[in-house]
Length: 299
Image 1 (cartoon, one colour):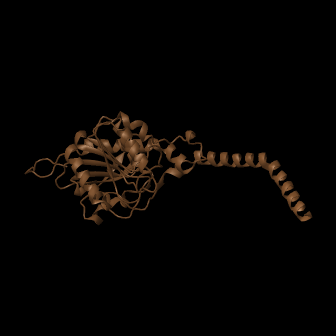
Image 2 (cartoon, helix red, strand yellow):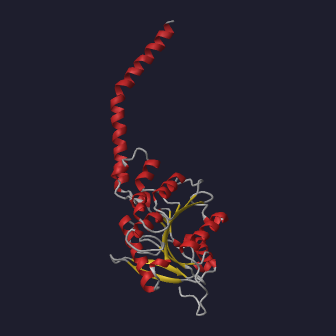
Image 3 (cartoon, one colour):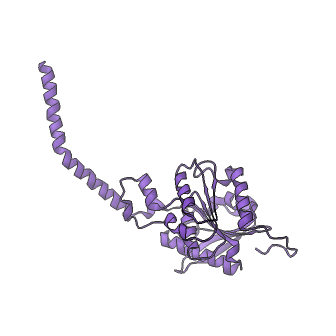
């Protein structure tokens, strides 16, 4: 009995000490969270952009003809890119890649566009691959502007034969561009609704409303008056499929939602022939294959 009283008394005393320290611990944890949150907000670019300077190859590795291009942005940054022409093009794609790696890690995507009858301009954002500069949200928008200008002026293509195709973060870049530039349509592949919503998903303690990098795809999408195709996998392990559904719901008609296969980084059209067939049918409506021209391809 005495032992029980001693145990009980010790537990009560310990509990009192912990209770007394409660306000201090709460304040300490809140302070640490605030410091961590402030650090993440101050250095948010390092949590969003993961560029790779090393190039893993060129379209030649995929058996594709290509031309190296240099794009100069409005603020004087020189970007590196590739122009990959299709043999009998139905139109062109300006491809905006995701937040990691560089264009040399997307050779399978270039082959995919080629098989779909699309010429493609693939470019690296500032700070990625061989492009100059350091990535920022506003910078990626300027980078896309230079890509649009190149396709229209250097290639002589009508905006109404050009798609803006964005992969993950690139979808936000494509949508922003489509609010200011004419195009035939926008394709959003595995794209998130916004950076703050992704932050709330992965960093619940972070004051996401204070983030200055927004990439507000969901907020901009309803203003687009062009066909929108949303590609997303229910198995996406990084950007939830529900975000793709919300983007689809927010888009104006005409619009389409095609379910992909696999995860965020190991799925996509190359892994899903059924989805590729649906995309081809969508393209037949938006960019029909032109009649054969005896003079050869014009793209």
